[in-house]
Image (cartoon, rainbow, N blue to C red; front, side, top):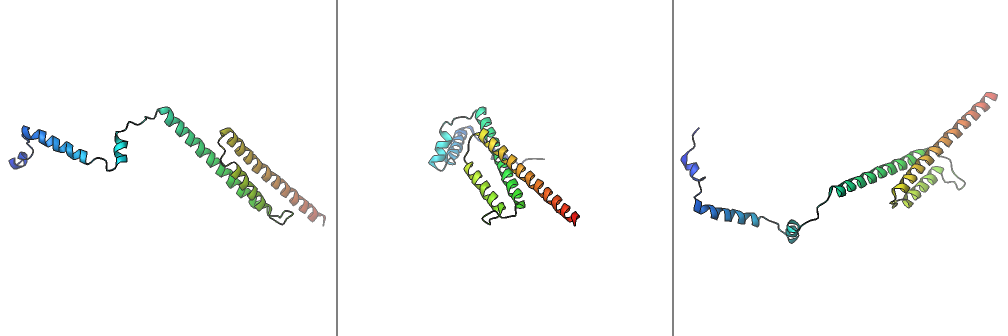
Length: 156
């Protein structure tokens, strides 16, 4: 493979032109710099370096928030699913399902801006326990009702 001499002539730069070419090249790089004052300041002002501890704390805080949000949503969904079974009306004629959902919404809104992780954990655990206890009582009452109906049916 041979290279034509005409192509190589373009690659050879005389030493006296080297300074001029470097100056022009450097000047072009400066011209392609930031377009706004904010970009210029951001590029040249010394920024506070983040330490590994700050990044670790931020990641840990985000993970905690994400997990508590997930748990809160899980609890809220469990409440909504559990209230489907409360289909009888209260003394005012409103379905218990709607009453329970409204009360759950109020409780969640009251605890919405809670920052203390211990308190959030207590609320979540208490909520899960309350849902489980309510559903257990409902199942027990339904079992008793079924047994009572079977006993009445057997007597006939």
